[in-house]
Image (cartoon, rainbow, N blue to C red; front, side, top):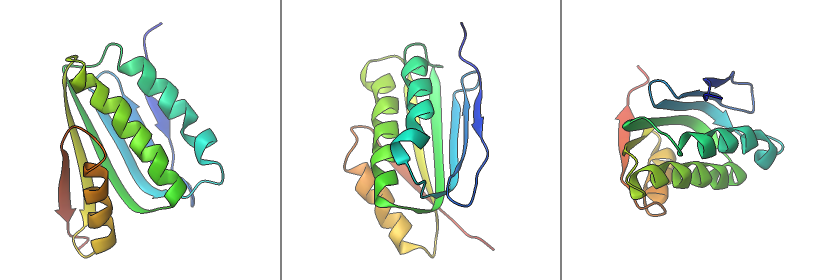
Amino acid sequence: MPLTHYTLEKTAKTPHISLDPGSGKLLITGKSVPENVVGFYAPVMKWLDEYVEDPKSTTELNVQLDYFNTSSAKGLVDIFKRIENIQVNGKGSVNINWLYDENDEDMMEAGEDFRSVVKIPINLVPFSKE
């Protein structure tokens, strides 16, 4: 059965997630402080496990979070590691973009921290909220 587009609307505690197997574009935006991080991200991990078996030639993940808690950081690392497997295993190229408000030093540093954990580059992309 072909992999379908996975979409989750954001709430006060969870991010908007859009995973499109047709375009290879993956998006996570908003705030990530779910009560049960493992449970919240489980469907995303399952989707990614299937996607990495037959990914597009180029996969792009854009992450633009206003805030995330420590538990969510582990979930994000798990997402990055699954996606890096595409490139590490020679199944395609991967672009991970960490978008952060240019005035938010904490989110910039979080992106730098994630960079040190994965084997492929994470692009730090500042933006202006104005």
